Length: 505
Image (cartoon, rainbow, N blue to C red; front, side, top):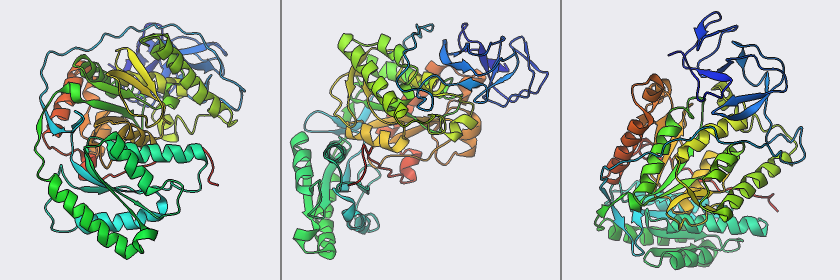
């Protein structure tokens, strides 16, 4: 097979390998060389007419396009998120032309993890050292590293981890509230045994308040805080911090794992460094995982609101009720309006330059491939950024498309395992949530094997279907619960970033 038509309604196809001018694919003579993963027209498309992929609009023709011509940003105009042309969100009426089947599995997945006092389930059992404000970053690093690089007893699943960030002071009230929410949620995550919060003493997000809220949300958890100005300086804070963390680590390594099931999973789904194959292989495979986790009583998070622009009609059709449907549409359109208010073309920011090089031409095309991660189960809730996940089934969380800000938001919401699909490759990981990388193509998997766990390229070649690949991902999740480290964990990718809403003041 040389190229793929996703839906019978499509008027473009995606090449599965480089195709030279004059070659024939899907009964179409190519009028230009077409790079791997890029699109060509399968019929003549007049200027101003809709270009369709995945059975939905991905833009309009900026000029007349002949069958066999390359279709990309030079002749495809996005209709969404275009502040350079619009002043408000365009209401483009579309209907679903694809009705994917819900993946199903009778297989029993037996997980092993750390059962918490509130019934939640941890894949890991770490001690987290976290600053309430960026002024405490270096102190946090020195406390954690004093133990990480010592001969103290620790395991791969029970160790000291830390994060740093650039927030916690000089923020407007809603930004300070969001910063606090993310730090609290990160500390309360079931993958964390205990927390030390370190503050300076004059910040807008006080360490004492953060520690108190973590304890209120997770009363079973060991939580301490130190304030540099109150303790008497950096050196004394490090000394006391090391003592506190050593004690928590000694307790944590005594923890015993118990059995769990997919009903204990809060699965974060993410795609980053996407290419045109992401929506054809890795994301649909992750969608099968999402369906099966939900079928077995678990929870799934679909985030990246930016990457739902142009696909929200599909998600809205799956809403459990009218309120959820309205929440989906309001959230996506509100985010898009913020993009439009920036008075710029969204292309270049999203899709990024790497996405565009990988064959993605518009936010609509990227979104339509992105949404496959969520499978086909109903949407049961819509949550704000970093808000705690309380519903079984599929929850949409309002996050930016930025990989690290999104992953940090899901972790703060309680995500205990993440599957991250990538076409171009990315090392991103979380300090507390095991993050499984799945490549959309085999070339990226081979080239970046030190940071990618699984290869969905076999779906492109036809060696596997998305359900089979989904089962492989589920088996990998099981192995991670039994102590196997993800590549991101091996590489110590303790990435952490908070979505900033306004300027520093």
